Structures are given as structure tokens and as C-alpha cells.
Length: 478
Picture 1 (spheres, helix red, strand yellow):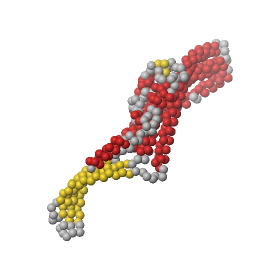
Picture 2 (picture 1 turned 120 degrees about the vertical axis):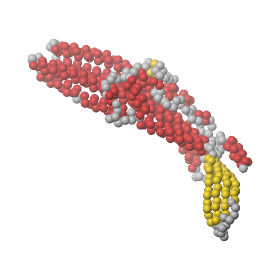
Picture 3 (picture 1 turned 180 degrees about the vertical axis):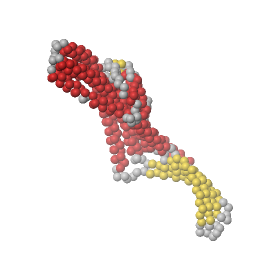
Picture 4 (picture 1 turned 135 degrees about the horizontal axis):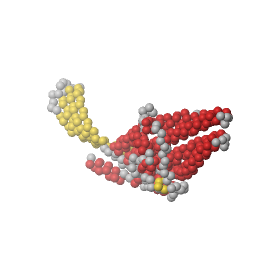
């Protein structure tokens, strides 16, 4: 028996490295061949910490809202459960590599064809049974590596969802503040146009105006008032969306703070000092795609290991007591050892087809990784461009609104003095409303561009720490 065990261990030590994961480049090397040295879009640089990017908005309500969403979101809780499931699968795969030891017990009372009292037999026994399938050619070890890569992928998928939720919540908050500002603009312009209507009606009484001016003023007021219900509906939609992000019903969300109008968050127009390669190594979707490559590489090895023999060792030992009525009780020590081996001979090409399928899936995962990195670089370039352009347009529209406000005041003064007709007042009112809307929209787009930029850079919401490169020691080995 000792000779048998020694032979198994010798075989195990010799053949443990027989099958390895498929060869592929590690993530830093892949990123190095894909990422440019610098961004193509020039943007002001700032040393903002990506892990606290939301604080640059200077809005404590936004900070509390994001914390609430990351705590109560149901999709995120489901992602946490998926990570736990992957951890359980990894534990199961690791257990396969180790022997199983079980306790056994038997008890029997039987009668045999013999003259009484010898025909009555009672037996009882206890013992231990060991079962082990030594992973001689590494198939089970590679299966464990594939499960570990899947676990890492689930962890980074949770990070990706966390990042998306934080960005979506911030975007919904920006849209809420934009809708509230839009409603305030409409209400302010409603007051302006009501005063203009009253002015035309007063002037009509004294023959200083015409019924046409009154009709035009009334028409302008009615058109503006028709937009107010739509703005109010938009506010309710955004409040409901934020409630769902928080894992609550729209009726249960605390609207006391959110329903109070506030300004659109105003981020700085600078981008973090992050290189393209750093952004790719930080992005959760890139890490998820690379974990898939690691998983597929290990699965190729699992498929190749099917070509080799599999062994199973069974050991059992115990005591058996037998009592024949009329005779003394007999005891015996029971020991057995068995080594089984199976090796494929003919399978009609099934194993070869499995290997080809696994290799194809690995190549597909590598292509997905490349595509994910290219998409990530495009998103960062686009959001950097959006941040720069919205910063400039916001400043220009701020100046334009100041000019249209002054123009509206002058038009009203001239109309009151009879120096101009009412069409100039209507034109000035329309220009002031359009500039107010445009500036409000530009501030919204500027804030959304900042949110999108930090989302495209990885956002700093990772809970898994540094990227875990599963089986990295085998990534480039044969």
C-alpha cells in the first residue's frame, strides 16, 4: 500500500505541470499596445482625486443622495449576491482538489438458512472511508483558476454597476435641478409677460395701444404657460427615477430636500491628470473583459486535460462485529484500497471539438477586450471634448443673457414712453426667454459632461481594490 501511495505522489509531482492555461498577454502589456501616450483633446488639468470626484460639485445634497443609492439600490445588492455565488463556486472547485473523508456505520439483523439458534445473525460496524481523485494532469486545478477568474470578473462587474449607479444618480440629480431651474425660468417670464399684458391693456384704455398688441401679449403669455405643466411633469419623473435608484417607491422617497429647487451643480472645467493607460487599467469594464480572457484561457487548459487519464483512489478501514446466536461475538478489522484509472480511447472527436470551442471562445474574449478598450478611449476623448466645449458655451451664454436682459429693460422703457411699438417688446421677451433656456441647458450639459468624464475614467468607485490578475503567473507560460 505504501508503494502505491509513493507511486501516486511521484506521478503527481512529475505531471502536475503537464497542462497549463492558454498563452496570452497580461493586462498591462495589452493596454500598452492599445493606449496612446496622451489624449488627443487638450483640456485644462487638475489634481482632482478620482475617488472623490463628486465632491468637486460642492453639493452636499448630491453627496448624501449618492451614498443613499449605493446603500439601498436593489440591483447593487443583487450584484453582491452574484459575487457571493462566485465565491461559493470557487470554494467548491478548490474542494475537488482535496481528499474526502467520511465516517461509515452499518447495522444488520438477519436470518440465514441454518438450524436454530445458529440461523440468527447480528452485525454492526464502524469505520472511515477516504476518496480522492488526484489531479495528476492539472485539469481540476485549471477549473479552479477559471472559477477564480469568474469571481474576479463578478467583483469588477459589481464595481462597474456601482460606478454606473453613482454616475446615473448624479445625472438624474443634474436633470432634476435643470427641470426645477426651467420651471423657475418659466415662472419668472410668466410674471414678465403678465406685466406686459397689463401694460397693453392699460394703454388700450387711453387709446395709446391697439387690440392687436393686447392679443399678441395674451398669445405670448398663453404659449409660455403651456410649457409649465410639462416642466412640472419632468420634475416628478426625475424624483421617481431617483427613488427607484435608491431602492424605494416614489411615494416613500424623501422629497422635502429634493423637491426644494436648487441650482444646477457647477463643476470645474478641468479634467483629472490621468493618462490613457491609467484610465484603461482603472475602468471596471476593461477589468471584467480581461477576467473573461483569464477564464477562457484556463478553460482551454481544462479541455486539453481531458486527453489524459484520470485516477481515483478509495481507502476504507473499520471494525466489524458479528454475533451468531449461540456462539461468541466475533470482531474483525476491515481494510480495503482501490486505485481506478480511466483514459479516453475513442470519443468521435468530442475532446478535440471541445478544445477548438474553448480556443475560439478565448479568441472571442480577447477581441471583446480590445473592443472594450477602444470604446473606453473613445468615451474619454468625447467627454473631454464635451467638457471643454460646454465650459466655453456656458460663459458665452452667460454674457448673452446679460445683454438680452438689458435689451428687455430698454424695450419696456421705450414702449412706455411711446418711442417704439409693442413688437420690439415681444421680440425682447422672446430673446430673453431663449437665452435663459439656452444658458440653463448649457449648465446642464456642462454638469453632465463632468459626470460622464469621471464615469469614463473609472470614477474611483471600486470596492475590489487593485485589479486582481488571476493566474498571472501562467498568463504567458506554455
